[in-house]
Amino acid sequence: MLWYKAWLETRSRFLIALVGSVALCSRMVVIFLRNGAPSQLSQVLHATHETLAAVWLLAVTLIMMGGLLREKAAGSSWFTLSLPVSRLRLMSVRIGMGLMEAILLAILPWIAMLFAAKVADKTHFISQASIHVFLLLGGGVLFLAASFLISSFVEGEYTAPIVSCGAIIMLAYLLSDDKWRPYSPWAFMLGSEYFHWRTAQFVGPISWIHIGVFVAIAALMTLVSIKLIQRRDF
Amino acid sequence: MTNIPVIETNDLNKSYGQVAAVRALSLSINPHQITAFLGLNGAGKSTTIRMLLGMIRPSSGTGKVLGHRIDDANESVCLRRKVAYVSENKQLYDYMTVEQIIRFTRPFYPDWSLDRERRLLKAYELPLKRRIKSLSKGMRTKLALLLALARKAELLILDEPSEGLDPIGIELMLESLVAQNSEGTTVFFSSHQIPEVERIADHVCLLHQGSLVLDASLDDMRQSYRQIDLVFPSLPNESDVRVAGVESIRASGRQMSVVVSRNAEMLIERAHDLHASSVEVSPIGLREIFLQTVRGS
Image (cartoon, rainbow over all chains, first blue to last red; front, top):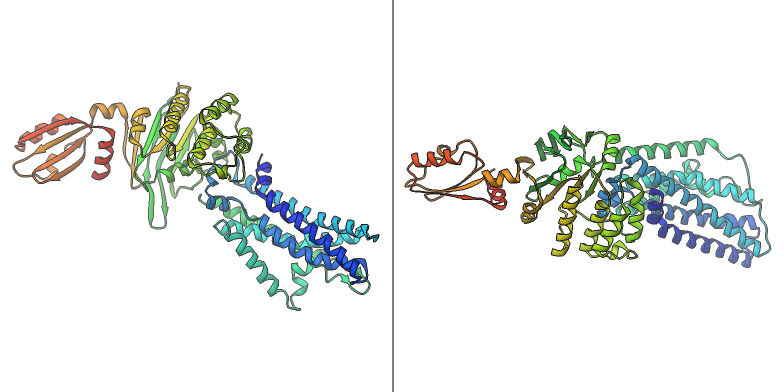
């Protein structure tokens, strides 16, 4: 039943984000194809993917807004904490639901984009789309964990998402420098390092080390969040 | 019928920085009773209750609820399966409807009774399809009570349960508590409403500034507590009248008002020795005991 609660809690934000990103991305594909610029479908989809990444980041930040601290601010944490479940389980379900929604928010707009292209009689390799989704999630996991961490120590109903957005913008700004770009999860999500614009193809092997580091940092942040909540008085 | 305490704390303390919210609290609550937990605002009642349920970690001391340690996260999960709780703040999930929150809560508790749920829904007239966000404060309180009372919990802990209820709602709630207690549930509730306490409680614990200042059965209190008003030609020192059992002394002019929990005869004798010109003994209600004890501490 905790999954049911997590779904009811996030479904409005998730559905709005899903409908928004599906509509925006498929519309962008249609407009690009109608204007004939960029000329190749892969370029069109890559350009749209950059917009999708920005929308995804915002959506995930909003979806991860929640949890016991937000419930404390709203006054309902007493009820959640009186249930016969551990705080670890409460948080695991929240992470699980956030992760599932984040994956769907990456996959479904891409399906919509491919469908929009198909309607315009253009076909695209599924493998190219899969790489985009994979990169989005590989880098995005760090932001997902960061939002979760922030919501585990910032109190207030709306303070956590505001702080999360601020932190993400700051991180993106700090890592925008060419020197730091190879380490930037945001650049990784966009896939710009691997996408060769002229040939409209992905080049070079994807850095598993990068993904490993992002996932490890995300896991560490999640662990810290769990410890923070487990030790906290409510 | 076992007499192992359902709630037992030893030297329990909780401090926030320099502020002590609960001090050296040693409580022992017997099973199958209705115990009222009284105290002024900020006395430490809610902090104590939250410590009992594992929501707040004690700074020091130990405690057990239904045999489970309150400072152990795993045991706390087990104890919450047996305890029904309603907080002072009756906020619930705004994004759910009444029906959804009942459906959500039901599977967590094997002791949930569908029959009770139906009865309470009817008695409280709760609109199943309405969102919690749009319920009035009273309705929300009734819903929180339903979620606790639809179970056959071993222990019911309620923090200011009547807050936000109208007189009919209070009456229904008190009837439900007595009915639950008659079926074997121990009830532990905090309240500011002395008439409610006098109506249903068997036992009273009074907390003042984080410390337990009174722990007695209501019957014993009715029988043994007395207010003795004394008038002297010249006011003696308080220490002259402080015999064993004196709970509080208030002096004004040549008059002295003393509340005793026992040894009233001894105090009267002492007052005569001190040449009291008037000695009046009167029984005392819980309200006066509460006020005198709090002022006297």
